[in-house]
Amino acid sequence: MTGRDFFVTTMPASRPADYYLGYLDGCVFLDFDNVGKDQICLKRISFDGYGCCTLAKGAIPLDEEDSMVFKKIFNDEIIDQSVLRAIVTKTIGLNKKLIWMDALERYKLI
Image 1 (cartoon, rainbow, N blue to C red):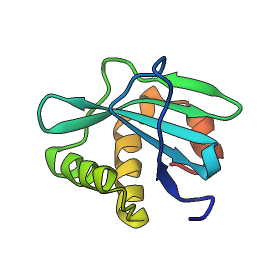
Image 2 (cartoon, helix red, strand yellow):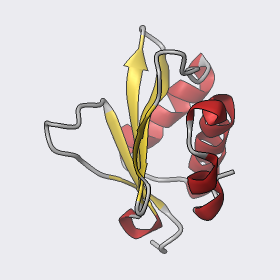
Image 3 (tube, rainbow, N blue to C red):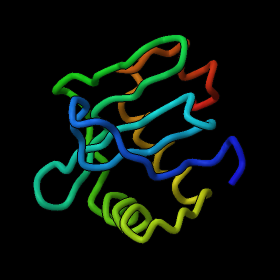
Image 4 (tube, rainbow, N blue to C red):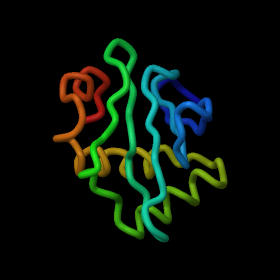
């Protein structure tokens, strides 16, 4: 694992979500929730030096196919970095109006 890899992690009960990813050796954390039966949605993203950005109720979930791939990667804990990066990039793109652009640019997530 390199510093630019995503990794499965956990968070305290005070930060509830269904799935947690870390990035850049823990400088960035992404929290996802199940939405309905077959989709996931980015719930919050936190950045060192910026704080925690909670997405509004208007957040756009991933489609069912990407959600299924994400869940498989997460549950198997076999992180295919290229596929996971594509999924994270897609969810950030769908929701970039709800996330701090300067933080996304600093951490090269857009």
